[in-house]
Image (cartoon, rainbow, N blue to C red; front, top):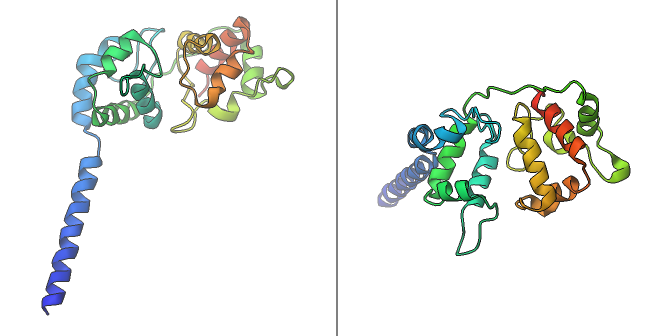
Length: 211
């Protein structure tokens, strides 16, 4: 009887600990919302729908990808940040890992207000690169990683559909120049290095119009 009581007590205690750990693992969305409305709002909008083409829309982006980017903006163990950006470096510096998880989950849960493609003249080139790439030059189809509709793949490849074409273009050029270097296995740097300015502009504009 005593053994049964002890076993029951142990099981109840274990269950309580697991429930507490699960609760603590949940992102604090209320705190994240407050941070978004007071800190992030100036550049990205309170709901992640930036009004500034040079600042990315965060609404609807994959939480895992957002969290990775925020961590990459932070200097770790005295080493330079993987993704160098003076503004975002300063914003990310005081964030704890829980803060990062909260902000990532908050923005991922917001409704994206997508941009649209603007150039009819480049749509054919953009579509070709997105769907088929240029295999003779070693440029794979963008859709292979980011999906036919630009939805991306959580934790690995960001959603590009509806993103500002100006921002996507700037990031591709940054990868090409080696100014941005937080892509796994130099994947984006290798691809962008083979692309011309007109190709980058065309595919960035095409991606903006994807749904």
